[in-house]
Length: 242
Image 1 (spheres, rainbow, N blue to C red):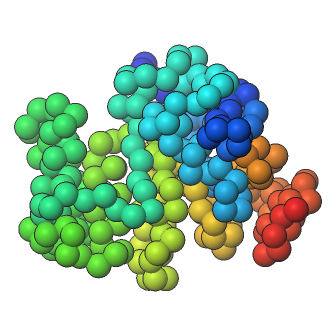
Image 2: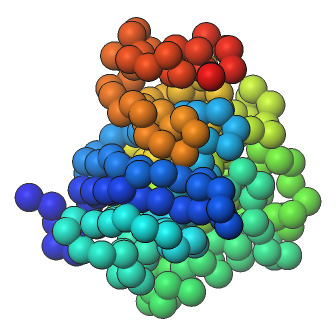
């Protein structure tokens, strides 16, 4: 049984979103269980980032139904999740102050904020950078700050939108290592990426979007061994899906 207040499992049925006459998401239907790491794949414009923004409450869907452990979306749901973007959104403050600000915004007691801040800095290898201005760090370091801030909130669900797209291989591997540790600690992760090699390394499950629709959801091993759709086969072979 899910813990009291848990937001997972998630069920999405018939989700749609349009900008003017052009549909961006069409009849999107899928489900997420309470554990694991799901990678969302698809070509540019498939609707991956829009889907994450809807799940995180940043965009209202045009139609469809979303049920978080049987409940509709709302503030109580969004407080139990966190999101990391491709370009880190950091305050003009130190690394520690960026994390502390997010914890204070959640209204946590001072002692709990101190505990979580120390754990986030240590867990993400940021102890030596705690007093440095966050915006003066390298791209990989900034993304680690953004991830540490998200994990400090102890989210049930962590959403990530192309978090390593602009990073070099070493910084990418550092972020991937942190994600695997978070997954192993019980955080449910949904990662949007365009990097098929990264998806192969990390995914336990794949959701494949094409032209605004979910056309496959499968265990990662099955998806990469034998994708059911022509579009997915083209994508993982590096060809442009029709």
